[in-house]
Length: 134
Ligand code: CO
Image (cartoon, rainbow, N blue to C red; front, side, top):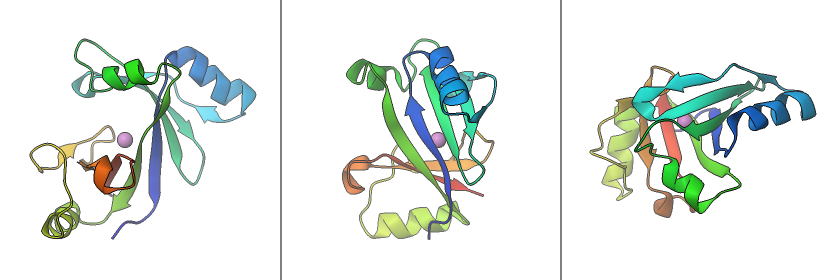
């Protein structure tokens, strides 16, 4: 069902410091910050060639990652994103087997303009999983 690892998303307390750490210390290629108001985040994309790291910081009131940052003030891994070819087929199969899809179960347009779903971390070894249709 799942294909490539599309990205690992990390919530960080200071986006500029995080971007500098990845660019200057780790020598990675990082983007300028991109504001995604509809997702309540500012993102810096770290391009690794085979996959990406997304550095996320809350944007605006009611950001979905604000509580995560409160609980993890130093930052931390928020989710991993796996690619799927057919997100509806993936959802149907998982739900039939009793796995929980977050929200109303309808794919939403994610940060890359493609349909995404999130799977309940309690069903997947304590890790929030995003599925993205490629
Ligand atoms: Co993501």
